[in-house]
Image (cartoon, rainbow, N blue to C red):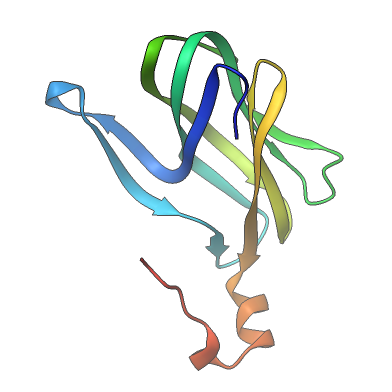
Length: 144
């Protein structure tokens, strides 16, 4: 996913991000989907990390859309990134007290210079719905 001078290398979702000594980032609780005991759920805090390569000045933001893509659940503040030729940067967007009212496939969009560069699903479900639909041995999560 890229524009002429900017490439989105990857996007990760996690519970928290810390900046460590040496300007290293530590990611806690990386996830792909959200499973909770019951809905609606309000997530106290989570982060979206985007890793960028390229050059020039750009405006980026992250949006989360409802399953029908008709409503905005939350959006980050627009962030300016400035890259030297061949440069890279990580941009972290924190979200606080985000309410997911119902189960479904929400959509996480990463935007740069008003262009949607990436859109991927974020499945939100409750444990009762999963357990009712499948035998327990079929519920698994693979970590690579």
